[in-house]
Amino acid sequence: MSKIHVMDELLANKIAAGEVVERCSSVVKELVENSIDADSKSISVELEDAGTKMIRVIDDGKGMDKEDAVIAFQRHATSKLLSEDDLFRINTLGFRGEALPSIASVSNIVLKTSTGDVGTVVHISGGKLINQTNGDARRGTIMSVNDLFYNTPARLKHIKSLYAELASVTDYMNKIALSHPDIKFSLTNNDQTILKTDGRGELLKTIKDIYGFEVAKKMYEIKGENDDYIINGYISYPEVTRANRNYIVIVVNGRVVRNIELNRVINDAYHSYKPDNRYPIVVLDIKVDPSLIDVNIHPTKMDIKFSKMESLTELITSLIKEKLDHKTIIPKVEKHLNDEESTLKDEINEKINKKESYEEIALNFNVVNDSAPYIAVNEDLIVSDKCTCKEDVVIEEPVKEESRFPKMYPVGLIHGTFIVCQSEDGMYLVDEHAAAERINLERIQKARKEKTTSKTDLIIPITMELTNTDFIILKENKEVLDILGIDVEEFGLNSIIIKSHPVWINKNEEVIIKRIIESVIKEEKNFDIEKFLNSVYAMCACKMSIRANTNITIKEMEKLLEDLSKCDNPFNCAHGRPTMIFYSNYELLKSFKRTGFEIKN
Ligand code: ZN
Ligand code: ZN
Image (cartoon, rainbow, N blue to C red; front, top):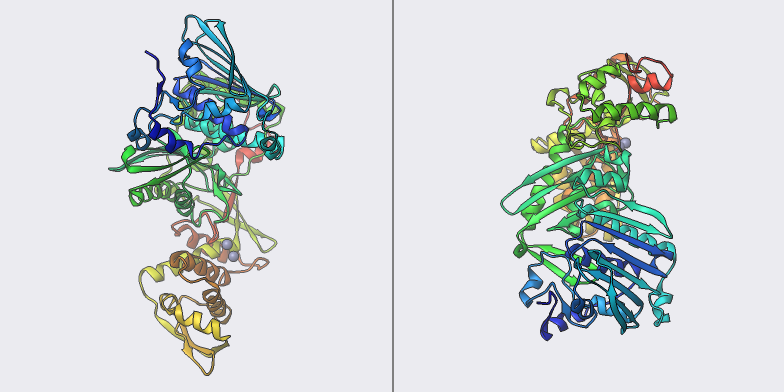
């Protein structure tokens, strides 16, 4: 029996409304998803001129028989949807029977396909069947879409630039590869390789193939589940961020989806570990009962709604926070390997392939130490081009709670700004202001948690004259001022007076209080109070902290470091910037071309 059923009219109409072939990437998307549906293990996409001249998708899937090869191009034919209910229980990738006929109507197509015996070749031009002949018996499908939009010049004009087309295809291919680490993908444009994954089923390896080695070695694996969701994936160290959200990839039941709210949840979970306007690199694979999701069926978008969003938010937040709160997050200064050192790296890889223990390798390299920086060296070894054993990519550093803050001793100060510290395993530079800011921030947060907003009187009360609208806004937001512990009294026409302030403001009182009032006025109605408070606290912590270019004594440095070590997150300032960076002995030796790290024997 034919694999492709003609679906009923009702369903066809439902889908047809949104059906559009907009650009090269929509063609690539359709063809690649068909290949995935055909159980392919290897999918190659070849483009000429970013796909405008040619898009060829080659797979090793189950192929089509003679009959299906023609029916596939007829309207309302699909192998994927059998009834209307399936629309809401999407577990296979393709679910539209519309795209292929649409693509065929605006291009010249050559389809070569075979289920393993006699092959079929079909030529279609502008939607019309030109001929159908026998082809070779290679199992799989080769679909070549030539001269896209050749008969719809208006559409062709819509294509902005070849570069933009290529970027859009590449973005799609990256995401589909991340959602299917078990499938081998490749993408070329005019014979130049853009993407190549190995299909070995290891997500971290795919992340390396797409984002590179430097990123892959700075990813945490996360894993967890609750009654509704199962989550697996990788999140980047807070120091690895990008300027946009495009590097947050969410895969639900095997398909890449968009959900703005989830992006926000992920970004919020990193709050204060990185600047809020920078975004982490994240790949999350979410498994959920299909009845709990609502997919907005539009062929070019993949918007999704979760009916148990709270449960999902909770799980994701806890998984991310759990990592960030328990890891030592100190950016390490590493210089790039030159040729000579690459050979060294090769030797390391060779040893890994022989499955020697990491400790042993580290010993040979004279960089042994029990604390995190030792692992830093080891991390270089974890993901590598040549690794073949699975352990290579799943090793997690065993950082103990008490060892999170490294032991370090201040030895001096540079430009009144950076404290130079010595440690057994290297050298730390601590940003004096950032450290003080973190300490102040946590002091404020603690005061808020304990609700000990005891107040103290100002020697000279602060008065502020406001415009009438500002005055009204301020009165409307009295609740926020109450939480902050600032009592505002009216003082004549549109003027206010502040006579006391919470004790946690212990420096720069006037500046800080005025800034708080200004920010309350600046906020729009119905703003997110928690976020607002966080930004106010960060501002207060900053204003109370020692400025750059201030010299302090070694004793004061020791006190600062001690206070910092007691913080819940000692590694970032209130704005998510690092408080310290680390130079390992290994890096120092390497930089000075000392021989201490060479292999013995
Ligand atoms: Zn600051
Ligand atoms: Zn800061």
